[in-house]
Amino acid sequence: MKRTLGTCYYPEHWEPEIWPEDARRMVEAGLTWVRIGEFAWSRLEPTPGDLRFEWLDQAIEVLGSAGLKVVLGTPTATPPRWMVDKHPDMIALDVDGKPRGFGSRRHYCFSHLGYREECARIVGLLAERYGANSHVAAWQTDNEYGCHDTTISYSDAARVGFQGWCGERYGSVEALNNAWGNVFWSMEYNRFDQIALPNLTVTEPNPAHSLAFRRYTSDQVVAFNRLQVEIIKQHSSAPIAHNYMGRITDFDHYKVGDDLEIASWDSYPMGFLEDRVGADAAHQKAFARQGDPDFQAFHHDLYRAVGKGRWWVMEQQPGPVNWAPYNPAPLDGMVRLWSWEAFAHGAEAVCYFRWRQAPMAQEQMHAGLLRPDSEEAQAMRDVRQMRDELTDAPEVQPAQARVGLIFDYDADAAWAVQPHGAGLSYFGLVFDAYKALRKLGLSIDILRPETRDFAGYDLILAPGLMHMSEALKKALSQQNAQVLIGPRSGARDQDMTIPVPLPPALPGLDVTVDRVESLRPDSPEALSLSGAFTGYREILTGSATVTLTAEDGNAAVMSHDGMHYLAGWPDAEGWKIILTPLCAQAGLEVIDLPEGLRRRDTASETFWFNYAAHDVTFDGRSFAPASVTRDPRDA
Image (cartoon, rainbow, N blue to C red):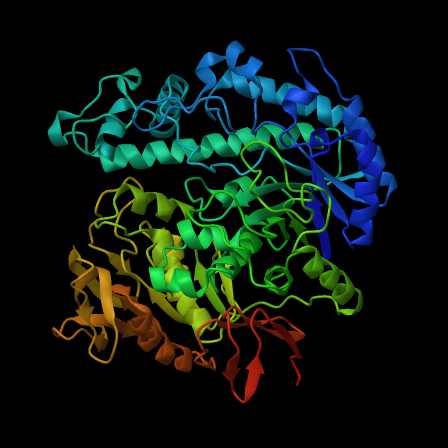
């Protein structure tokens, strides 16, 4: 697979006279792709019906004639001021009923039908005008669905839409009342139009109600995206992408991705370290100029699954960002490391955000490849090195990993509704498992929850799948692989009711969760060998073999015939103690990597990435800070 580079460009921010020179310099730097247009609605239509596409015609021609391929974004993430005047109720409301108003971006509610019609109109005009344009080689829908907590809206449009969704899903109010357990606290309804949104209640709302509303909201994102995709495909055969954002899990990216040819995501390693990774202060300090060693890799593997193998980094951090609590500059070489890591995980393209640093507005402190005066910024050295290295590098040969890790957006919704302990999340649990596997030198495939064919995987992990279909349980129980399930797997049915037989109710594994508890941060439950459960813990009964205990004598892992149930949330040492023997049983060779050093296998190469800010010595070799080392797999 050929690896290419690109950038994000905003011709509307600059005088047309500099566009040709910008395009020439992009090509000289080794860039192939240039994304434009995703925030330009006010320049395309400054007042209702006053369409001004001529400047975009010119920009596409200038960029394309220079040899660049254009990714054309739809501008629906930034509706102009006149749109809000025309549809004042299109604004999303937060959980407290406060408006998410005009003055930045993403100020719309996915449920508002009037705004959807406006989006269909502008996307249709763009698709008709540029669908056959030879320079437009790909499309992007909207921008970063859900960023800034904008997926869930408690507006009147959402309330009306949710009532209709409930009617379609449950068929009758009686069925809904039964499914949600509304007899509890006399919450029963007589009509669907009585159903309010699950906010502003005296105490916590019914978890079944909250989960249903999150599922409804996810469906609105899918429908909003599908509307644009269907319009574009009427006029263009170019592939369509959306750029997801790191650790945004409140809608189902798999379902959005099913309507697209490419999944992409926006990678900001240092910004994410501060506000999304969940790392402690010591970890943040150690990796302040590099980013977390596993967070980017996790998302690379996740979006490879969302895109069914075809994925990009649409925005790669090139220097300090503007939005994190602290915004240091990256170590020299880190932009190159991040780029190579994406390619090692199968990316087709890495595009740097942005070409030139903006001198105005909210992102003026966000670095680009150029400074505001058009001189080269820090990252351009790395980009030029990437250009030269890609010229001689062999094409990436993808390979299925031997370890599969299931990630389920619906499980994340269920955990968000009922975490059972402060700071507990499904994403955090799965990410901890992923980090532990990476620390053992393993490559991982993220698997969709509807996966039933696990051929080629020697170890499969399914932690925290709050609801498990009987088909998935059966498929996992029939594998020759080692399978680790739990905690909280199968803990609820489709509508957040505790099922009977009690969870996990796995075929061939006699284990029952007798009770559960969440643990204080200062009260971990030590495991018998090493490590501890932190945050969450279950007490198990059953005839399956106890293969690991806690110090209090209760089972930590119970096993039978390759199936294993994990009764809590391990810390890093606990994960190592649990996973190492499972890998041995699965025939997987593990290595205990030093902090900061990570490995990724492709079919033809082994990549080594040193995220540490210092030299790391391992197995007789020295790895410099921010270094990328490639070994042939047959070496």
